Length: 199
Image 1 (cartoon, helix red, strand yellow):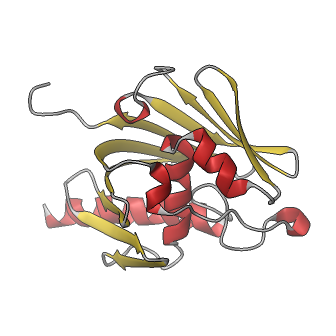
Image 2: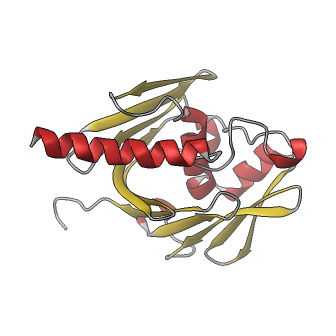
């Protein structure tokens, strides 16, 4: 069992490290993106406009590498917290953003390249109200739009960077399937709400 747990954690760490070393594991890099544009900054937890808790199953793919994780997301006006677990329920890392400060705790084997702001940006791009995202990007090279029902796009300096599709347009985004593609860095995420005990 220990050998299996170690292999599972190593697989997650390898995928996360590969994504990060290519420039991002989620939308926007902490480094300056091509074209010397300003990096995309995460929004405050309060900008969600509600208190929310959700558990999501995330399937991440980069090239031939794939891994499944479970994210527990908790948002209040004061704080945003994310806990990532592997397939065996072992904690990989946790992120907490509060009062303008972001902290992260990593399990052994999870690379230092995993930056908390990048995880937060991806979650916010998928789930935050588009009006809040647009307000946060005002005056920057970044732009988010919903050109079609069930589709959200992120652009930088007019160039399409990423796109997310929702299986249930117009409904609670946290309770439906979505898939995200990052065209600049070539990774994808498929996200579903975790099954409950009654399902």
